[in-house]
Length: 121
Image (tube, rainbow, N blue to C red; front, side, top):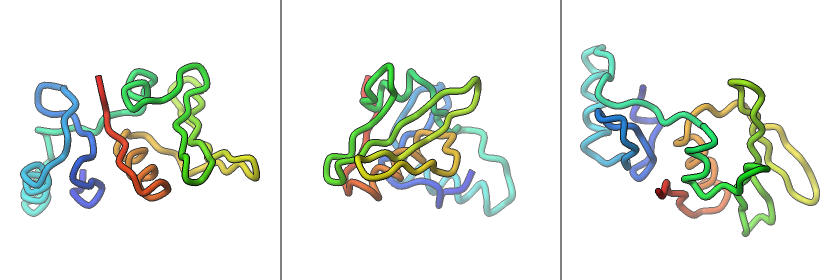
């Protein structure tokens, strides 16, 4: 785990396996662990699952998130343990590099929409 993978506000699993937002304290902890080549054990990545996508506001059934300013959608298709991520619009369809974690979805959404995508219960 690297602090450069995250932005403040991204989702991460805390020591109690609860989803929490990344803050400066968490980023500092990750950096400290990496500086002494110690495994980051306190926090874990939030995996892409149907439940976690639902918490992001994904439309169920087709599993997608709309990006209104681009008139596009990020689609997630589940094949066993694999998740295929596709950027779709009326003009094109682009299969993206594999995403495994919710913070990657949040970072992609931020880059495309210029808005935050938060986990809600």
